[in-house]
Length: 130
Image (cartoon, rainbow, N blue to C red; front, side):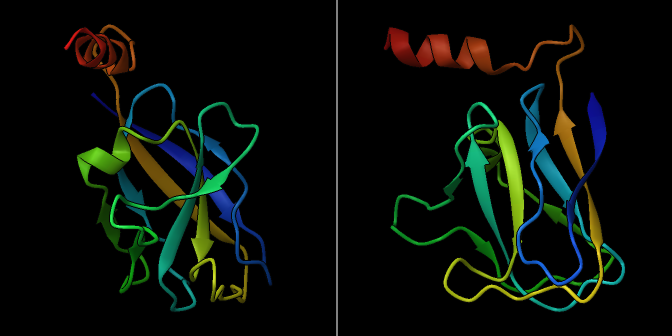
């Protein structure tokens, strides 16, 4: 079942959003603000909403969406979506942030299990059992 969460928000003149709790499911989609000042997207994630880290893939490259259209939806690959507990969205990259001209509200969609569980526990238990 798809659950849409309002937020996070990048404040006017800023490059990094506040955080949003995605731990109730798996992140599957990010909807872009209609007034987006053109810039790539990059991310910070956290397991508990406390300490955040820039998101990198196994190839030692920062996870980015290089070309986004204002008002569009960005599909999140499942290997990345499973890694997100709490999320911050950055305008630009960690090395080249791009301030947004106005406050920008995103919407994020998470896939939740019909029973209300995140669906992460069973997969984690199977991984540990191997």
